Image (cartoon, rainbow, N blue to C red):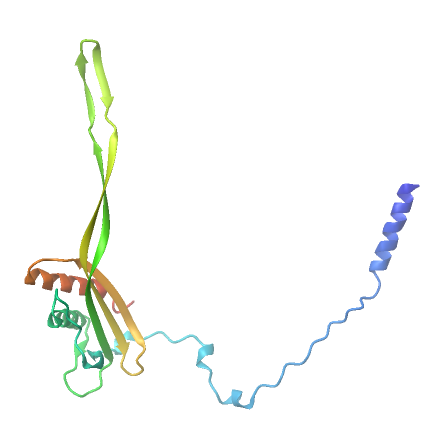
Length: 202
């Protein structure tokens, strides 16, 4: 009897679910487009075209200023290293009043890095005979971590499109600090070359 009454209630519930839905879907029409939509081009709605790095042929220092010097290296050393690196990439400096394709800025600074070196000392394998017979064994490996500070030369190079001022390229690199004047010049050139190594991007 209980089974029949349960089945009857289930059937009545299914019949009730088949009634009409009191909710009706409605939507408002889209508002008309503004009149200026037919004449104004929204550039932000489209991706920017790929940059043509081949059209950059000449350069000048940003705001006509050479890179700032430091106590470790003077301005002329940094400027020469950057100029040589740009020249290797087909970019020629302008020395007259013609407009350049690129504006260039560079910066050099000394920074301190904390380095860690791990050395694993293994006293090795031993073997041989004693009065009790052959003996073999292995000494344990002992890891030693040394921490030290090192001063490095960090060079940053920034390129800007001379027509609109937009950044075109920015990179920085570091190299170890060296002592005498000749070694410092080599260190600056090495850091600049690392920074410009991937220019122009493929």
